[in-house]
Amino acid sequence: MAATEGTKKTELQAAAKSSLRSLAPLPPGYAQLLEDLKNRIRRAQVRATVAASRELIRLYWDIGREIVRRQVQEGWGAKVIDRLAADLQRAFPGMAGFSRTNIHRARAFYLAYAKGLTIVPQAVGQFAPAIVAQPVRQWPEQPATITPVPDDVNLPQPDDRAVGGGVENYCS
Image (tube, rainbow, N blue to C red; front, side, top):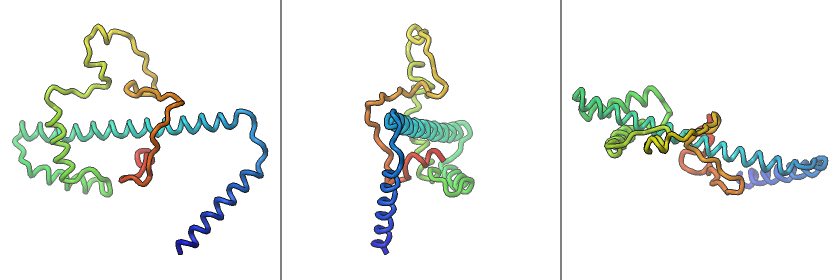
């Protein structure tokens, strides 16, 4: 069975190469346009991954903060985490990240880094006002915390075989 699938794949690849050869010659600048577009797509994938990761970090921070706040102010016990995890898993079936262990980790994450730390939109917000007084132009399509990557830099490519899938998991 596997040999048949491999043969079909090879036949499809050969047919695709054959059809590409039969196309008319490429216009001037086409190859450069293709490379530019591929680079832009790769950079957009990286930015999407970074944005999704940033939002998940904020989410886990907020979950941990709320649990700690309620435990301190309202006297909630540790068992509430078990119940919260079960209720979140029921509310979001098939969505990973809300197990009992992860909720405990969100609380531990908050406790480990909460002392003297504030999450700010930009790290520059923590510097002296004289330095911050410099005007900064922010482009709407590019968050200020992401530095554009030069075209000649090889970006790491998403690996679909990695645990949890590739970048497309964040974009759906």
